[in-house]
Amino acid sequence: MSLLLRRELELLEREILKIGSLVEDALNKSIIALVDRRSELVDEVVKGDDAIDSREVELDEECLKVLALHQPVAHDLRFVITVMKVNNDLERIGDRAVSIAERASFLNKREPLGADLNISALADKVRHMVRQALDGFVELDSNRAREVIREDEEVDNLRYEMRDALMDLMHKDPSVMDRAWQLVEAVRHLERVGDLAVHIAEEIIFLVDGKVIRHHHQDYLNENHKESGDAPL
Figure 1 (cartoon, rainbow, N blue to C red):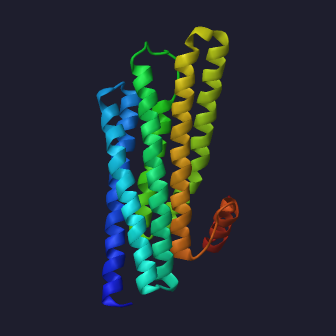
Figure 2 (cartoon, helix red, strand yellow):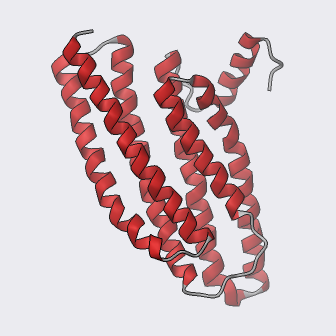
Figure 3 (cartoon, one colour):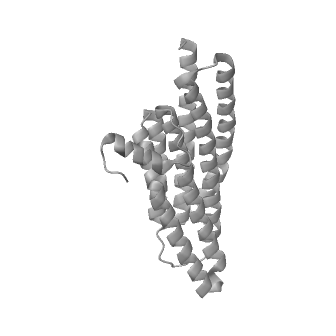
């Protein structure tokens, strides 16, 4: 690898981490706005999305320049491709954070539903998945990526539990429909953030192991357990 290419790749890594930091901050603020009814954070999330969008476009352009000028191969090529895909996933997480904040803005102007929901548990799990995915990218750690994929089922289950509870509440008391539906949507956006963290985990595994596991998560996890001598999942 040439010294110039190495510097370009290091620049791409620094930039993707900056975007990751902005996205994590936006996600955390949107969750606090929703869970703690902190409406003053909504505008920060919405306004901050412009910076995320701009950086996403700039990083994409830098990746294309590296591909055109240096024509990287093998691991270096996989790295650039991974940066481009992770960049896109992070931008989409930022969009989901905006959507959660907008639901929080609506709900915070109205009386709480008082329903027994586990939104904090879902939010904590999703934030942990995003953090694990970013750490896995920085450390080139496919074990962290696998952990993100394993956590996704729990996130899905939490979402479905809350969706069903809110649907039941709307059926029993139509007067709460507007508020309950906004919560259904907020929960859906949180679950989608978890899905995007899984996408990042898939790209980490592609980068580290050279394997494309999209649509074949369980096969990959089972195969990994067999190779390590553990019992199959």
